[in-house]
Amino acid sequence: MNRDEAKTILLLYRPGTADADDPQIARALELARQDPELTRWLVEHCARQETLRAGFRQITAPAGLKEQIISEQAAQEKVIFWRQRAVLAAAAVVAALVVLAPLWFQHRGNEETFAIYRSRMAGVALRGYTMDLATNNPAQVRAYLAQNHAPSDYVLPAPLEKTAVTGCAIEGWQGAKVSMICFHTGKPLPPGQQSDLWLFVIDRSTVKNAPPMGSRQFVQVNKLMTVTWTQGDTLYVLGMEGDEQTLQQYL
Image (cartoon, rainbow, N blue to C red; front, top):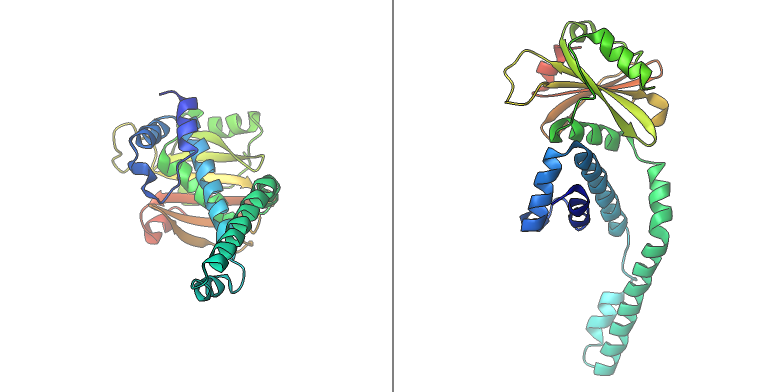
C-alpha cells in the first residue's frame, strides 16, 4: 500500500468509531504512523471530520415531525405521505450540505480556534514526525528557521534555555508557518525517539482566540500536558508527557 492508496482508504475513516477495526483502514493507519507527511494529512482529515460532525449535530428535524408520523400510523396512506416528506426533507438537507459544504468549510477555516490549533500541534508531537534539522546547537536551529521564514526570534524561559535541544521542524497552520523546537529533558527515551519536550511557536495574529498576554494556560491534550502563553506578537505552546508540576520546571 502506498501513500495515495492509504489516503483513499482513510477518506472513509471516522475517528472515534469502529472504523479502525477494518483491516484495510488499520493498515492505512499503521502506514500513517510511519509516514510524517501522511500523518499530517490524517490529522487535518480528522479535524475536518470533527468539524463536519459538529455541523450535522446542529441540524434539527422539522418541529413535530416525529409526533405526526406516530399519530398517523393507523392511516397507511398518511404514513406513506409523511415518509415521503421525511425522505424529501432528508434529501434536501443532503443536497444543501453538498452545495454548501465547501463554502462552509472555507468559512470555518477562517474561524478555527486556538483550541483546535493546540490540539493539532499536540497531535504532531504524539503521532510522530520527522525533524527538518537534527542538531544540539540552538543557534543552528534559529538560523535554519530564519532561513526558511519560520518564527525564529522566540524568547525561551530560562530553564528551557538550559534544556538540551535536539532539532526542529516547520509545521503549517492556516497558511502560516509554525516553528517546532524539539528538546530532550534527559529522561530515557524509547528506541528511535529523540525528544520528549516540544515547543511550538507562531505569530499570534494567525490563531483566532489566542490567550491574552500575562496568563499561562495548562491543558491536558490526550497524553500531552501543554502550557500556552503569549509574549509580544508570539504565541507559544509547550508540551510533554507528564503533569503540570513537571512542565512547570521548564518555565
